[in-house]
Length: 181
Picture 1: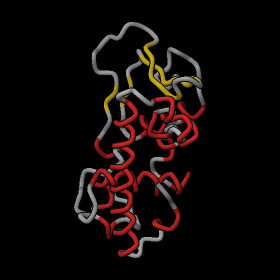
Picture 2: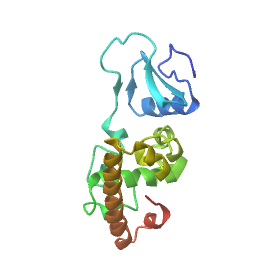
Picture 3: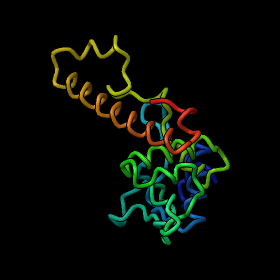
Picture 4: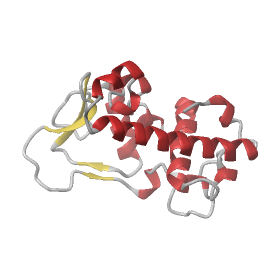
């Protein structure tokens, strides 16, 4: 029951409840001492509802993970997905392939096996770190160490995006025309 703090499926938001249901149905374990909650300032987050009885709060089976391994049919411990990104495997860094797979799966909506998880991730509109700032907001960081760090990180992401985009286009991956940095 949503909001019942005595239930292992306790949650304060329907999406969190769906996430916990999906997670536990597929072998994940969540301590009864915690709850997944939602508020505007933190988004989805975990909080203790009583003193923790164990330092282990969550146990996630490898088969529930979402990564570049999911596009490799040779991987036996993760869920294989027939992704349009498979031709990119080994041609772009694994972490970038993972980002792209997450985008592909988010675009699939309820058809994605990770839909309950992805639905709880922040969307672009809720991102508040300097990497998401517009130029007028970046100007407020002038004179701080954060300004050049954000600039360097943005440049790195742009370079990685351009490389991945080139590989996707060469491989004929339609996703290349459907998404942007």
